[in-house]
Length: 193
Image (cartoon, rainbow, N blue to C red; front, side):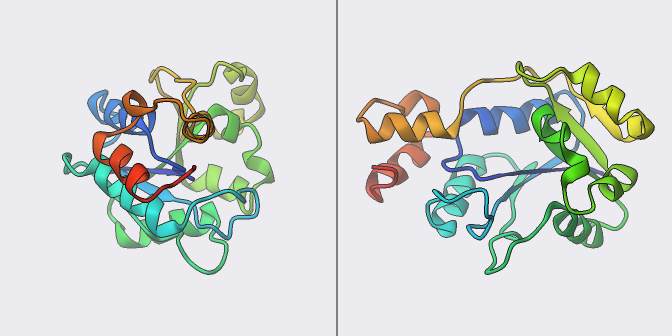
């Protein structure tokens, strides 16, 4: 089985996150997608709502599809790096192939990550193109690892969680951007106001 690990802050998870996972499945890039929300100890994210809220919203968003799952592996009291996460899933699924799903923007600086080159050597990267990144240039830089980099034909979407949080803060409607249950959960818990 090919398992796609899709990490992110999911602050909040929205329809683009869901559609991306479904499209990767429907286009047969992977057989299963596991959403892995980043823990709140991650130093580059200082505006995350509580871990349990983001986990719960992801559970709600994916509940109707048994090929989608969510893991709380990174929701710990210390920073968990991508290398730790992929190693963890490889240990859980020793006979399966682990794919790290990321945007071209993330791939562009993977060599700066903790054990980034090791990851390129040992895991498959399933890349979503971004309008702002020159994917050919990025692939040229990492040509040595081209067998482990798969550029998907999943269409990029410019929808962002930041945009949704800002709309909620200013009282704009976001109903159409979110799963119905997620939207109601945000309202009930007064998140992002």
